Amino acid sequence: SQTIHQWPATLVQPVGSPLSLECTVEGTSNPNLYWYRQAAGRGLQLLFYSVGIGQISSEVPQNLSASRPQDRQFILSSKKLLLSDSGFYLCAWSVTSAYEQYFGPGTRLTVT
Amino acid sequence: AQSVTQLGSHVSVSEGALVLLRCNYSSSVPPYLFWYVQYPNQGLQLLLKYTTGATLVKGINGFEAEFKKSETSFHLTKPSAHMSDAAEYFCAVSYIGGSQGNLIFGKGTKLSVKP
Image 1 (tube, helix red, strand yellow):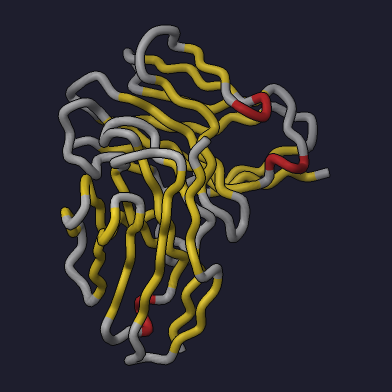
Image 2: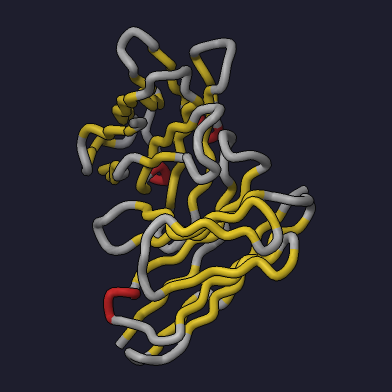
């Protein structure tokens, strides 16, 4: 069966510090991968998606970036965090773009 | 453009009462429809999905939803609410031929269950 992992589970970082969140999927090959953010009271915002190694599409311009160095690894990064980057970050995978996505447990990021 | 509207950001029911969470979608092509549940500080869990075939779909935890094309709706129901159903519920839509990131989510409905 497929499993999706995210770490860390929680993170408190000062403004201006770098960020690296990691997501890995087990039990499937060549998945579509997604990063979402949930800010308080603002629903789910799609940040990035990837259909293959090195292929990243950005949905929202901001100071975040994503990379996919391996087939089942998806990384969300920032060089300098802003207060507005606080939120709950979710990674997800799907077999194809139209079908259901399966979500990881999330990372709670607080920027202070 | 595709969109999803969830009526009611908060719904409160008594334990044992009917749960009805509303979802309407806008799509110019046949949609795929999904309901997810999210418990506090957890990821989203797929409750049920409609792709093709039978319009009444059953999911986990006793939930079901009916696809009504004429009403462009996909409302989520459960005959008898349980305290453990308290969570946030998201409706989502996608379609074949859309962009690779095209699972479009509603803004969510928080369900409270009173004892």
